[in-house]
Image 1 (spheres, rainbow, N blue to C red):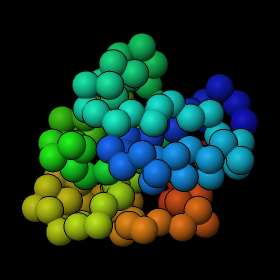
Image 2 (cartoon, rainbow, N blue to C red; image 1 turned 180 degrees about the horizontal axis):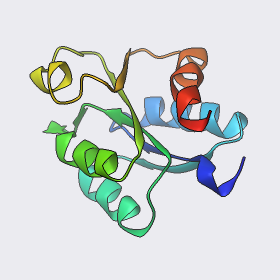
Image 3 (cartoon, rainbow, N blue to C red; image 1 turned 120 degrees about the vertical axis):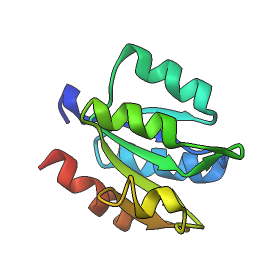
Image 4 (cartoon, helix red, strand yellow; image 1 turned 90 degrees about the horizontal axis):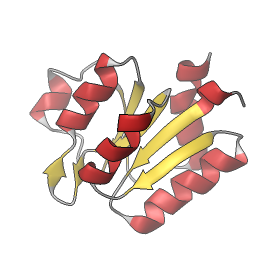
Length: 118
């Protein structure tokens, strides 16, 4: 993949984040992270914006919305993942972004990211 193939992973569940990372790397993506906190994620994107991001909705009980807003304002394609996709922000402010219910299969994750790299 090209330098434009960077995907940020933000998830506080280590096994899930590792699974996402392995899936993406085996498909040829350049992974940023995984970040396990919002501070860590903000630090990563302060240097370089990813082409796409996989964001858990709640990271250590903190909503991911501020990070999602920053990423979206810079043109990053966002895929939200969560066991609870019924947040009001998803129904209003982020209704256009892709969402996946946990647990997420590798096949579904790659399919959700495909439009960002088409």
